Image (cartoon, rainbow, N blue to C red; front, side, top):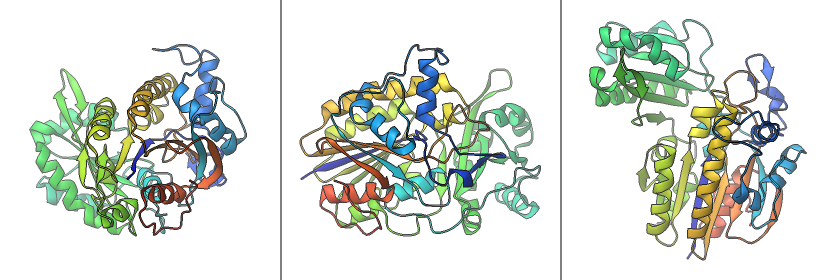
Length: 403
């Protein structure tokens, strides 16, 4: 029996989305955004030599067909990413009306989103008064802080001291459909923060806000404040059974690595392993050693997006791509006969683009374990259908297998 490993390198888009003009960073449409192409061009031109140098070096993904996928998606080839083809590739197009994490992951897992998400306006205040009153009441505090669009790292720098003094939770949002609450793990309490976010989630989900996110942090005014890995996402449930549910119905275990359990509200997830990306790579290797025949490992590596894409850090993004590609070589070497390994993404986040939001892009689909070749332009939902076909389980979504 076969196994499948679905690795989402968060935000690593390849341009070419046919509806990019309908999505914006501020007043600028996403037309022309291309995360990987623009990073590779910056590296080739010597504009990304902080902590690394020279052309972008991704030999393992290149051998799986990365440049073929970029060209199919956007009509361009990225400098430095040509290699003899040793894998099977496609470029996937999203149809759901969103460019956020749940939307992309759900559609990759076979379920397009049938509704429009609710986004909070980029105004001060961002949230309605009754929502803030409910948050304060549930927190047992005299009020809340924040109530704006903000960077998560910057807002704790600005309001961390006041948060400790007042005990009030820090509430903020972004261009995504999210309601985020930051609080100090010791002064406010980690479990108290999780409980508050869980209590707020039903109302926000009813508004079609995709996620309520607990953002714990530690530190002091003197030492500075730092977010911890104890983040927890309370996501709205997918509108229909996903690949994870299909696997569970077939009595196949599903290992969620990273924030996968949060994204799918634990539906269809057998076991969760969390941490920063370096720890997640160790978890992935462990699952490769431990997972039984028929299993799915579904992993999200978020730091491309959270540390480098939103912060528009081209060199940092390039370093992380090269780190992942080097680790991927070991992952491919550990593969057993019958294993399917798929590397893909959920949206774009072009670090050369204006603003700080995700960018609407196609994504690469790079496969190891199914021979060589290419499937051209496909749908996000075809990823789930292909994995289901490989594992011999029933597929219930609109996708079609390309294997």
